[in-house]
Length: 292
Image 1 (cartoon, one colour):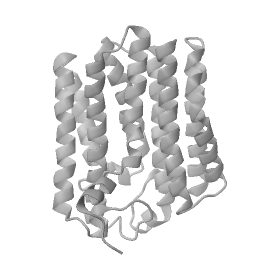
Image 2: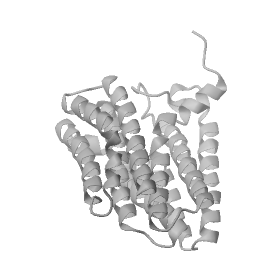
Image 3: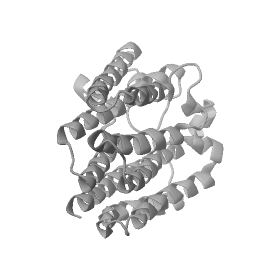
Image 4: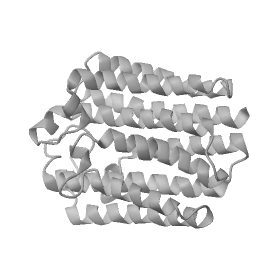
């Protein structure tokens, strides 16, 4: 078997299947801005640049940090650049800082044209991106990963996208941020559930390790339910928000698999469904806000 090309390695390391978690909040935040007073499309594009850059930067940073700690040895799931030994750790670290820096530049442009206090939010996001698995005391090893994802890829990303376009936040943005945050957490819960046994062996205390198998599966189902309830909460504002239920087939299929005891390789298919669910939830809700 031939080795993958360098470009394919770097694309795999960026973990493109996780990118819906970066695109979805910008869609919903922009839809909420349009619903209120009209979107500012160039700011929406800058927000998308921030979100995508940070997501890719986080993925490379996690690859680097887990790789040098040995947490990715014998890992089930996507190719890890450092853990596999196919790419030098130093190169992956440079790539991580490069994308995080690019996200910072996009964020600086948004702050300069919106509000300078956004720099504080951006600084917190960069700290969270590196501190997840990086440094001597990563919070991702202390069962705080899902909380960070909910905050930064849910609340901050959606509300921030709306704020830079409107100068305020709205009820659809708040509800959407909770739903998107919940589904972003669903992706991480599935990922950590898949790796739970191996994480325990290397003392990586994810939320799945802390909760155990059964409670992690119930959390997966509960987060999906929360995302649905946020759409229901928007019915008095606009029933078009229910277009977000376009995600339901993937939500139901993944939840049935997880509650049915899916493990190992079977959870890789679940991860694909969770990513699609978040993207179609965001697309449906955004379209609903655009046509309302």
